[in-house]
Structure formats: structure tokens, C-alpha cells
Length: 108
Image (cartoon, rainbow, N blue to C red; front, side, top):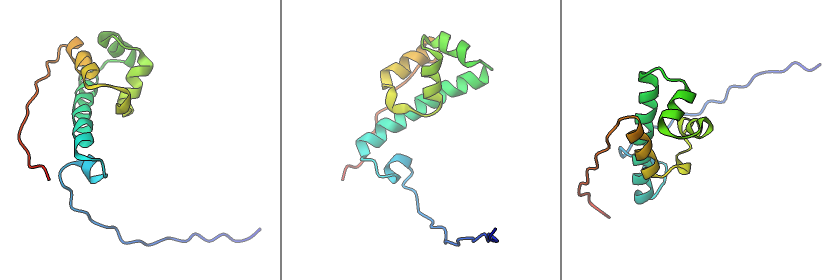
């Protein structure tokens, strides 16, 4: 049997200055990045509610009127499967009110 040697690859880590918007930094167009940011914030609110209230996925899904597999997809980050209004409805069912704030930004 051959003696296997482990090689360590040394690459210098690149530091990239963030724009403050993860999705734009990943290359999404601004309008898609904005939608993903909104969905992410809503999803985090749902996940925080579940953790804060020590709910099992079955319990949380029942309160939000969805199936456990669907909730699992949300928790695992499959945001593309959910609309903003569906996420807002889930939050409403667990007693969370959503507010919308629109602000002017510079468009290039």
C-alpha cells in the first residue's frame, strides 16, 4: 500500500468590502436582492418565534396553518418557495404584525 501524504493548499484569503447587502454582493440584481432581503427578514422572524417559544416544528406549523415539511423548507432557507404575502400571513397567525417602510435610494 502506498504511503499517502496530505498536502495542504495555501491560498490567501481575499477580503472583500461588503456593500451592506449580501444578495447584491452575491451578484443578484438590486430588485431581486431587495425581495430576498425582505423574505429573509420575515423568515428570521418566524424562526425566532419558534425558538423563543420552544415550539416543535409540528406545533409551529399547526399555528401557522402549514405542513411541517413546508415549515422545514422555510427553516432550511428555501425562500424561493415562499411569497412575501405567504410569509406575512404566517406571521399574522402567530400574532406578529408586519410593517412596511419605504425609503428613497439612489438608482444607478
